[in-house]
View: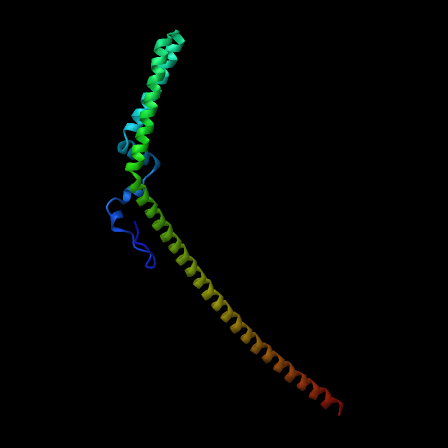
Length: 169
């Protein structure tokens, strides 16, 4: 990862060990969760197995086996829910760390965006100043040229006037 901007808060050292954990893809997250809580997929699998068994025994018309599979489904679902609750309490500290990390990343991104915005404003201000200076220079040059043309016209007018007045005398 890149270094955080100088004005942002430093990240806690507990995040230095395993930064890949927080920058994982969806499939990596699923496999990590399977490794962390392997009993939940097991409970889901047992539930599906019990439902499939109940469906087969219903088609055969075996009511005793159907009820047995439905009880197994109930136990499998209870097991899955118990594992969800246990896993949730066990991994709560991890979720708190994840929220802290997300806040730090959001703050760093906000500061980066703010810095880029300020640089953009400064660049636009410099461009505006340079444009105004060019306009001022061009205006002054055009004014001086116009002044020179006006002076030439005055001189020529005087010469023609003197010539016309000189010819009439």
